[in-house]
Length: 409
Image (cartoon, rainbow, N blue to C red; front, top):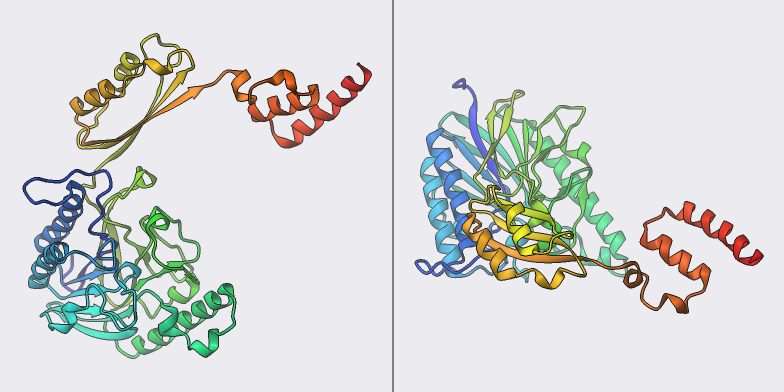
């Protein structure tokens, strides 16, 4: 890396405090899943130190909830302290960081109140000139957009939710354009750090844990040559949004998987080489806990438990959160023993068995809803076509032809 480049580490969506699919650690009293999230943060800290980062941008959503426990706040503060010893750190306020009332502080505002050295809290919209050991950087902060902050109450009185969302989007876009104009007055490298959705983005599992309503900013507003890099948080699936201006508009994604909706998604952060008019970047993977879905077909087996164990044998389940979906017949469904299968999965290295789901193949009689003798021929055929998944247009043609046959009969 050339010395003229500023070394920037960008990450987002820590969501510290998620406990799903975990067990209590007797040594710390914390959920094993909470420990997973802190281990990812420690990986980020170590990378920043080893690669001599000049600046770290955390693009929002520190904790799972707006009111984290003191223990979680203490452990995250230790992480911030370590990073701030290396370089300046921006903590942007995301929707999970916001208080329930405007008069209350956000979950990261304490760093601003105590004037923690080398730490900047982005709780408002503004442009900040940050000095790093390899030169200055302009950082524009755009926290999660709140209606109460951006829109006058008189403007929204009597308006529909759709009208309010549209007004909020336009107001945020106007602020982003103004920040770009301000940044363009200084020759230093410029970064926009934002926590919101962008039109055209591919969503992940954040919809399942989202707090508050959501709006989406037009990509063209962000793809402004005034910015050398746009560091985004809020959407858990890491992605770069292509644009005609070739401005890197990047979601770093979340740092750890939260559920099976993110089973195949890599997790990590972005490492950026920043200079005015010339920024390059790459995704860096973290050792996120694997989530694995096993789909096992044991319909033809007289011993479905043994068959399920056989099909699972040889798979690498080390440290994984596992769910199992076993296809069974009506005749052998009762023979599947969950406890034996769970024991086998644990012996194969699974960290946690989330669920064992039985997918029982019912007979045509059962799938038709029982008592088919009470149905007319037309009703019976219609139900049969539905069960078989026949396309609607084809089913209509078959039913029309069948009616003619029934009438002749």
